[in-house]
Image (cartoon, rainbow, N blue to C red; front, side, top):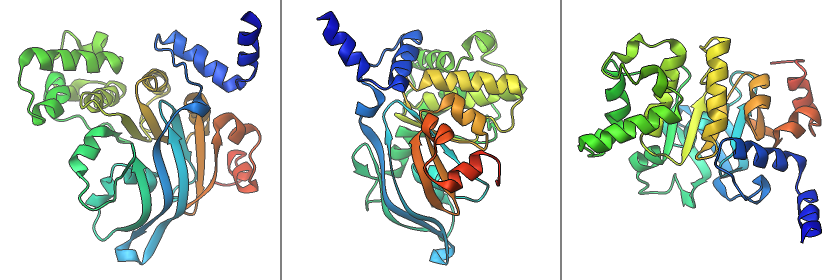
Length: 289
C-alpha cells in the first residue's frame, strides 16, 4: 500500500503538491489536485463591443476557470482584462450601448441567456473594486448592508455574519471594539479588506477583484495578498493586476491579454518561466507594457 501512495504522489505535478501543502497550512485541505477540479467559469467565443457594436474590446475569448483557484488577468492598459472581468458578473450592463456575443457560463448557467436573474448572479459572483469604496456608515452596517437588503433582520444572525465576514477578511481583530465607528476612519488597506468582508457577507461562490491593491502601500498589499491565498480555499478568485510580481505570488493560473485578445493562458509558473508565445515573453520581460 505504501508503494502505491508513492507512485500516486509521483504522478502529481510539483505545483499540485505545493497547493495541497499550502491548503493544509490554512486548515482546509483539498483532496482534489487543481487539474481535476471542476470548471466553474467557462468562456466560449466571447466578444464584447462598446458604442452599439462600433468598437470591439474583446475578440473570441475562450477559457475555463477552475474551482478554488486564483486566476490572474495581466496585460497592458486597454487590453480588455477589466472588461472581461466585469463581464463575468455583468457589471458592464451598467455601461450604455454595449453589446456581446458568445457565452460566459457560470456554474453551468449561461449568464447572458434571456431571463437571467442578474441580481442573483451578482450575489453569487462578488466584486471588489480598484479603489476601496466603503459606505459612509459604520463598519458594522457596511458588512450587514447586503444581508439586510436580502431580508435578514435577526440581530443574532446579522452579528454572526458580520463577525464571520470580518474574520475571513482578516479585519476582525482590528475593528471588533469599534464596529459602530465610521468605516471612513479606517486606513486604506483596512477599507479594502472591509470591502472584501462586505462582498463575503453576501456568501458568493466567486470573487472578482479589479486591481484590489493598486492604491495600497506595500504592507497593506501584502496583507491583501495573504488574504487572497486563504480565501481561495472557499472561493474561486479572478484578479486583474498590473503587477506581474503579484500574479506570481498569488495566482495558480495566469491569462495574458493584448489588444482585446487572449494571447496565452496557462499555469502561472509556466507563463512566467516558459511562455509559448513570443508576445507573452516580450511583455513579462518588460519589452513593452
